[in-house]
Structure formats: C-alpha cells, structure tokens
Length: 609
Image (tube, rainbow, N blue to C red; front, side):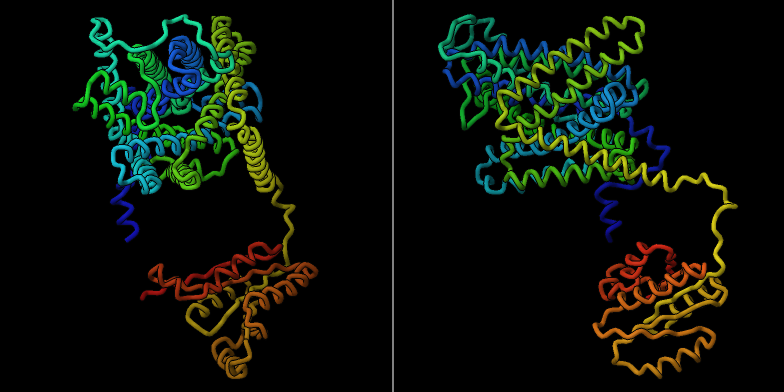
C-alpha cells in the first residue's frame, strides 16, 4: 500500500543512466534558480520606502540613489560569481572557494551560512506567499499557518519527483511574473513620458530633507540589499546544467542579473514618480499596478503572479540546498545520507529535511517570519564576502592570464559585500545578533562530524599483515531461546555448524513454568546441546542473558576463545504484524552489538502467513 502511494506521488524510479536527462536548460535553470532573487523585487523596494517613510514622503527621492547603489552591488556580485563558476565548474560556490583558498573553517562558515539561509528562504518565501493569499481571501486568515505548511509540502513533492519535472511545472509562473512586471514598467514609463499621469506630491531629486541622516540612508540601503539574496544559488548548482554546464550557468547568471536590474530600477523609479508610499493593508507593487492598470484583469494578473513567485522562490532553496549539502557530505562534513540519490535521482533526504525544518520554523513563528528577513540577508552576505576574498587569494597564488583584472573584480566585490555586511550588522544588530552565536556552533558541528568519519577510516583501514592477526582456539555459540520452535531448530543447527557443536542454549524462566518438563522436552529435541536456565524475578529477559554472556566473555578472554550469539528471529509476512510481538530479538541485538569481543548473528525464519 505504501509503495503504491509513493509511486503515485513521486512517480516510478529512474535508472542511473537517466541522470543525464535530469540536466536542465538555461531556460528552466533561470526559472528554478532565479525565483528567489527575482521575487525580491516584490518586497525589496518596499523595504527601502518603509525605512525612509519615517521622515515623511519628501524623503522618497532617496530611493533613486539607493537603488543605484544596489545596482552597483548587483553588478559586482554578478561579475564575481561569473569568475567563481568558471574557476569551480563542479559547483560548491562560496563553500568550495572559501575552503580551498581561505581554509577549512572559513569554508564551513560559508557553507553553514548558505545552508541556514536556504532554510530561511523556504520559510520566509512560503510565509510571504501565504500572507498574499489570505489577503485575497480574508476568511482563510486563521488557517494561514496550515496553508503555508501545505505549500511547503507541495513544492517538496514536486522536487521529489525530479529536477526536470519541477523545473517544467515551476517555470511558467516565473516567466508569467517577469512578463507581467515588464508590461507594467513599459506601460507606466510610456504614461510618464506622455504626461498621462496624475500629479503627485514628491520632493525633487537633490532636495534636502530634514531628519534624513547617514544612518537612516545606510539602513534603507541595507533593506534594499535584501533584493540580492539568491544571487549565489546558480554557482552552487552548476552541475545541474546541461553541457557545457559552466558556460550555460554563466549565461543564466547574467540573464538573471539583467532581469533583476531592469525590474528593480523600473519599480523604484515608477514608485517615486507615482508617489507610492507604503501602506499596511496593501503592498507597494499592488498600489503601483492599481495606478497603472486600474481595477481590471491586468491588475489581478500581476497580483496572482506575485503570489506565485513568492511561493516559488522557496524552490531556489529546494534546488540549491541539496547540491551544497551533497558537496559538504562528500567532504565528510555532513552525514553520508545527503549524498544518496532517491528513486527519481534527486537528493531526497536533503529535500525532505529542508521541508521539515522550514515547516518547523513556520509553525514556531506562527507564519510571522518578518523577523527572519534580516537574518536571511545577513546570512547570505557572509558567503558573498568569503567567496570574493577566497577568489582574491586564488588569483594571487595561481597568477593565470589576465589575473590582475580578475583579482580586481573579486577584490572590489569583496570590499563592497563586506561593507554591506557591516552595514546590515550595525543597523539591524538587535535582530541579527543570534546568527553570530549560532553559526560558530554550526561550524563546530561540521568539524565533529568530520572527526567522526576520520576516526572511523583510521580504525577500518586494512593495512596490517593478515599473518599477524590473533587466532582464537575455539568458537562458542550461545543461542537465547524462549521456547522450542522451528526458528530455534534452525538456529541450533546453524550454531552447531558455526562452533563445531560447542553450543549453549540459554532460556530465561520467570518461575511460572515447569522447568523440569522443559528440560526433558529439550533433551528429546537436542540431546547433545547444553541447556542453561536462568531465573528472572523481575521478569526481564535481556538483563539475565546479558549477565550470563558477560560472565562467559570474561572466561573467553582468559582461555582464548570467541563468543558468537546466534539469535533466532521470525519475520512476519506483513509489517504491521510486528506490532503484535514484543521484539525481544531486536532489543537483544541492540544491546549485544555494543559489547566487546561478542559477535552477533541473526537467523531469520520467514513466516508464510
């Protein structure tokens, strides 16, 4: 039943050779990897206006130079990540650049920051989409958290079905959103050029506005910089593109940067000209669409595609998180489970864990994830900065052709992103300080995982001469039994072959059975096998058997022989039948596998009905 449901939801399994078919084109790559960055134009300009509105409507002209500064930052990031993709075509982005050139801990800081940021991306984007949805249907407001969780599950299932399927489904809303905003900007600009707009009160560019301070402008700039979250996602997923993957990834990156720049400038410019101010009951983008289109189908088209792009921005996290987690897992900084591909060739474990963590965040914050946005922005500028300075070190060491110009691009990018990071840290310290405490613990966690894997490798390394291995004189088999059954018969016969008839059967009695009758029955079945009956006044089976094995084990060490515990276990035909049994065999195995010098062997007996 479960397998049939699984096949219905995520589809039939794919073969390894079909992995090449999971590569995506530039068209689809732009949709699934740029949705986070492109969706930010729905709230980035509004965040700038909200900050400036503290001193009144006259300060709105400052949105223009602030948008210009954000564009400079965007250009620096696009040029820098273009070089990152060509230098590291296998993906990994900021993590790989930082680890290779700055050192292990800096790489883990970059990787940890991005992983946390992708979790926040899903939670924030889905919550924003749910907010927009319930704004259209106010009667559903009390169910906002449930709606957000269902949206996470929807995108999770799409990604479990495979990259190509999710890219196909999710590309349409992204391009519809782009088309809607391009038409909005073009029509709005034409109306401004022809004078076909109502006059609005706003200060001319360059007007001195009382109350505007450098700190306020920096805070507004840092709010606008949130529009750049998601720019790095393409560099983490280079291997998802069709060959030549690096070249296609760079073209997609440049296309994303160009579209983002056009939309950002257009919305900020028109919002200034049309005198749009932030309001609690509606968004800046919604007001702008109403002013330009009026209350008609075009307005609702922009609203609908905005809701969709905000929800689908979460897909950037679902695409980039598994790729980065797989890179770090291959380097043994994360559990091996993150390198395992599922039935549909996606990293299913990463996708499921990301979805679960995002749902937990949404529930904990009751769908009000606005407080996470500053963390979300600060978290991404840490790897931005580390990646740029990592590339600077790379060019200094390697000095390839045109290395000075390449170094200059990354040095400029590093300086700019570091300045933005400091601005975010200073202006929003009361909201972002937890990340300064949390990230060091994440790095320590990665190092602990790596140490565990190194310790295992050291202990499992097969580099000793087999002739020097200690040889035991004999092997003693111990068979725990509760009664005489076919499963016990099979286990005794196997134990006799294993230990050359040196077998002890162990039975635990609670004092409520005829021990003499049991012994006589045993002798009739196995006259050559010694039976030991242990008494348990507290009705425990595991404890008396474990004490007996410990006692035998001490003798085994002195007399140079090995103990093998052979455990009979019947396997039920249906899984739910296991609930009807006490799982003594399983509990005994879990205890014994941690005992030194004791081997454990299970003899399964499969029931037919």
